[in-house]
Image 1 (spheres, one colour):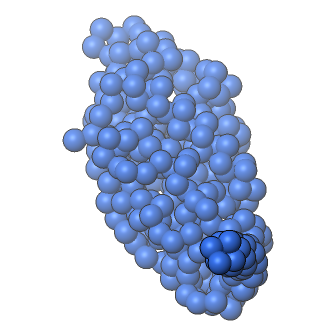
Image 2 (cartoon, helix red, strand yellow):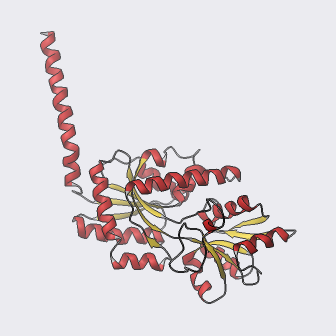
Image 3 (cartoon, rainbow, N blue to C red):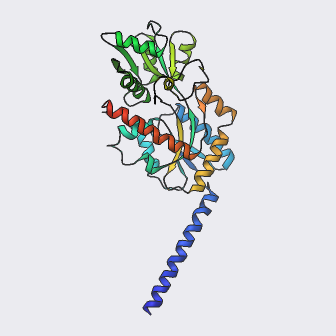
Length: 327
C-alpha cells in the first residue's frame, strides 16, 4: 500500500512538472493578454517618459493590448527599478530607464535590495545620447587638450559644473579629473537646465552637458563644444571628437533601455525585443530621438546586458576612486 501511494505521488509530481513546462511557453505565446505597465522611474515630460509613451502607442498598435506608462520617481531612478525587479516575472511589468541605472548600482548599493545584473533581464538598448564637453566662450580652450593644459597652468584650477551628485555628468567630470590629474572645483546644479544657466552666465568654466540642454547655445555661439562622450561621434555634431579618441576607456553614454524582471520567460523577452526594434524604425520615434540629440539603437538583449555590465564596472571604479557618495 505504501509503495502504491509513493508511486501515485511520484506520478502526480511528474504530471505537475510536465504541465508547468508546457504552461510557460503557452503563457509566452499568448502574451500580452491584458494591460502591460511600463514603469518609468523619472518625472513626466523627460526623455525617458516621452520615449515610453511613444513606444506604448506602437506596442498597443502591434500587440493589441494597452501599454500604460507609470512614473515611479525617487532615488535617481532606483525606486522604479526595484519595483520592476520585485514584480512577477510574467511580462506585464516593464522598466524603461536610463544610464543612471549603471551609476546608481554602485552609489545606492547599500540602500537598495536588488542587483540590476541579477534581478533584471535586458530587453533592448533603445537609444544613445552623448554628453558634450562645453566651455564658456571666455575660456581660451578650443580642444579638450587645451582645456586640460589650461587647468594645469591655473593655480586655483577651473570650475566644472555638473547636473547633480551621481549623474552621468558628475561621473564624467570625475573621470576627467582622475585621468588627467587636473585641479577642478566641481559645482553641482539641480539638473541640466540650471547647469546650462550657470555656464551661460560664466559661473563655471566648463561642463559635461546633455546635448539637448545646450544645443541651441552651441548653434548660436553662446557656448562652445569640444568633444562628445559616446563611443561614436554624434550625428548632430560630427566634427566633435570623442573623449575615447583621447583617453582610453573614457566613455559616458546617456543611454536608455528596456528591462523585465529576471526569470521572465525567454519567449516574452524575445517578442518584446522584436516589437521594440521594429518600433524604433518608425519616423516619429526616430525623429524624437534625433531632436534629443541621440541615436536609435535597437540591440539584442545580450548586447544591452553586456553594455550594462561594462558600464557598472567602469563607473564603480570612478566612484570608489573619487570617494563619491550620496546624502
